[in-house]
Length: 283
Length: 121
Image 1 (cartoon, one colour):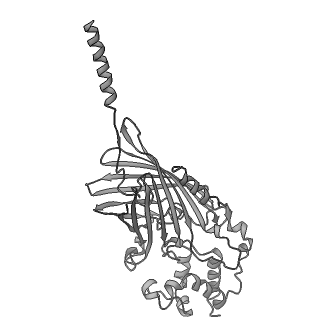
Image 2 (cartoon, rainbow over the protein chains, first blue to last red):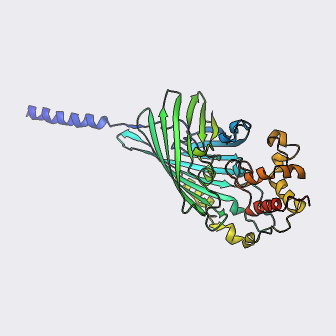
Image 3 (cartoon, each protein chain N blue to C red):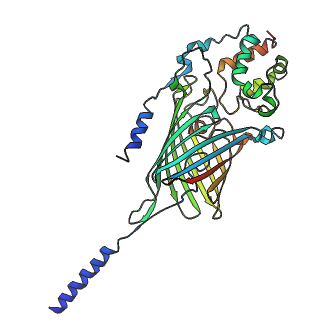
């Protein structure tokens, strides 16, 4: 009787202890150092209450020669303010030189990579952007509509941090332009992006990003576009992340990166550029 | 509600989606008039609307690499480079800088004007 009571008590204690020690979930952090891999978005967002002031530069083409100082005499810029409304929700507004575009975006992260009680192999974010072309109308005499200035982009970012050193992201993307030039130019463009980060030291990482743009039939496009490739380094210094970039795209937002990369790496149409990011804690 | 609000905002923004192209919407574009292109009537408006912000006589040294496009003789001496740049051809610096090409009719008018001997008319 006493033995059986002891046995019962032992079983209860074990299950009692098991209930107390729930497996905890460890969420992966810092899949990428910044909210951009190079040109395109990464899965990362701004934490709640933090404001990111981003200044981006893309110089001219390196193959324009020594007279143009290998492109540095020509600069395209993009300024933006990006804010974390919640840890999982981020918004941004910006203005860039390319087509004098004013843009805005929303980025939501429904899933984070984690191990433990909740096992999630990837982090997932979704970005939607709207881009408004600010140039004067080509022909002010004809009937021009404001909505013809607008393009939209949607991207799904799926990333995995494999270890402390290496992260990889896939970015299926969709770009829609309300107005294009001819019947052969597509209003809709689809692209698949891939980005990777290789951590070199605690402050420096090497990043690369490539978008494969699915051209329906590029023989008839008004302007020939090519797949954008960007490589470079992230350098983190206190409150700044400094990204140095080499790329064949001159634009710094999805409408130009996916829709208007006219340069080719093998022709030397390479733009040196950088992104500077300064984070302010507002809350 | 908190998680739904961003999607509501997105839906409101993206309700103005169109699938338009200029060729269908503005058929007159196909009838670009390249006969009797005049410098003052056709070329100067194109240049002033797209180029003088960097390539006026005043701005050229700072923004236009010293390339001035305000005077007729300057435009004539640079006409081959201008044609290459506005066509975004390989080996030329694409112009307007940082943007997509000029509208096709402007490019055709410039080329027609050059073919006519770049008259100062």
